[in-house]
Length: 353
Image 1: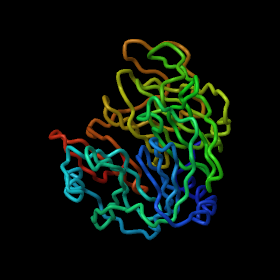
Image 2: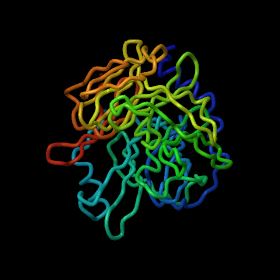
Image 3: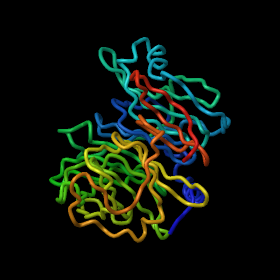
Image 4: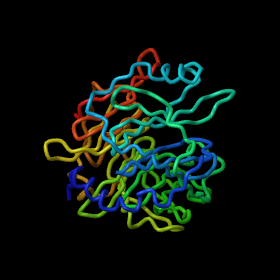
């Protein structure tokens, strides 16, 4: 069942020829917002734009490994604000992703207020922080029909590149609005969503309109799955092969990780020859979930009351508090965006727990 991150990377590289930039044309993508980011193994950056209901692919040209130095930028929101001629209060960091081809860190930034907009900042491993300008770059785009026009905030919540496809989570205009889409890359056309239904044990009911907040790809018994988390905090597994456009899919709830909580970000990593999921969330610190339980985990179908937990087990990494975003930096470290007590943000690398 278990598959190491090295093996996953090798499999992804085997399909990387699909994302070699051959279908990209040089120009300036009209990105109106940046809801979420993802990378292909060779450095193609995917941008989910809820405002324009579009998915963009940008060839970063950033494929040279830039070193193995630790990362630490305190008050990175103020540093970005200074470069943009504004204040930290007018800066929001929506997503943080590591380019696996180079190890450089990319941040999705929104500038609030007059003259605002969305942009990408790039931090190289020498510590240089600069805008990655979305101008005169090789890119492609595809429209995503049917994204929610009532809730733009949750229309796109998370992205991932899986075996030649970009998977998009969020809300649609369908009756069952919680959705996942698989869009082949290079892009040909957008697809109708797969509507997702799951049992929420803390609420003791089936839900179809709560968006997936974050997800991560993982192979179970050789098949591609998504491990996805919702507010309050159900954890589900979804077979990628079951994501059929226009269909309704009931997924398997394998964990209830405690209510009154919101998952923020997830990664998979290998430590001492075992795989783990690491989940950042708002209430309980970083959760470390052993992956060996996923294959045989039975679906939860009964209520879990009083803020209790059920299903797959986890431990809390109590010393990691205030983590808002995380990504795997390399085989031994993660990158985290942490909210400090003074409400400023620090971006730094940490050993994988």
